[in-house]
Length: 408
Image (tube, rainbow, N blue to C red; front, side, top):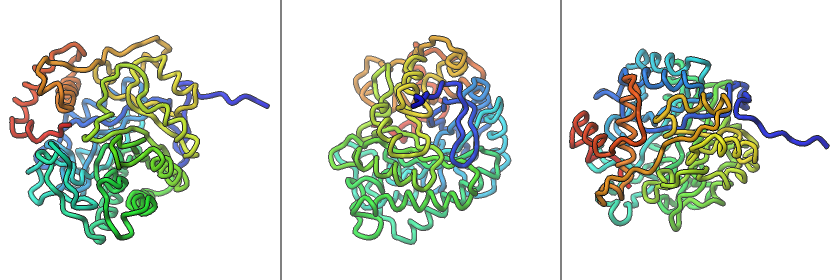
């Protein structure tokens, strides 16, 4: 019997839709918060993604692009819901597709995970379940969606995907992780509906699967459609690993082109974890890859070339996702692909101020500031003071926007 050889990081990957990506590295989504007041992409986005495209990564995922201007997840979100700003999106697509990179747009709706007071009409969710404890101060109690509103949201995702395709993006990803709307539907903790969209896991995954099928119909069979999914919510009564494996299998049956595994929500922000080395979700990803029958990506915690190569060689994943290392070094992927024994300088951020060090926002603000600087052609060092980044973001966006940011 011939031994199965696991892929090298430089090996191309052909997706189920027939599109081939040039290597096994993916730039994971990070919130850039670079939308204008009218929610169009700011010019910094094409400049930022040009730097990442020139760095050699095979797939570049954008930060979340919202499908409804009435439902922002944070100040500075980009929204794609109609044709008004296709020229700006096209400019972003052109620059992000340089050097053979595949630029994919991540599509999202926050559900109730939107800071209190950000959206004038309040928030919606599968059920009118408030966040527990201190999070209730940051996020208001949502209104439960009607069935017709759920169908409208499915249509919105499909329309945004088609617009992304027209603008020149190479694929789309549906964000069903990290506690946003799709993740809320999947979680029995947040979805207590008693109709066809709640109760059993089959019902709780209905919105995700219906939306995937609608997006596929909108973009056709030869355009990559990916889904980002939690391995688990890591909270009692939430979306479990067993649930996740079942959803992975269902997405595989639907012909999903790439399933990206992450984990956690802003109740339990495992995706902002403090571990400095090692794939956070690689152990689960190996089981998910077997269940999926389609390509699988694992993102979170990869900080050095050896760990990346091990994840591929072990069969844990077909693709490895990188995020923060590409901020501190836009050429990180190129160095891995050249065979260098590169290790990222990314580390947990600390200010010595307990109230700041205990929040996910400090990390978010530091990287948002760093991405703005990358877009201006500057270099970013992982050792730079977090408080300076926080001050720059506050000066640029205003204190009100800072206070409306997501925080754990």
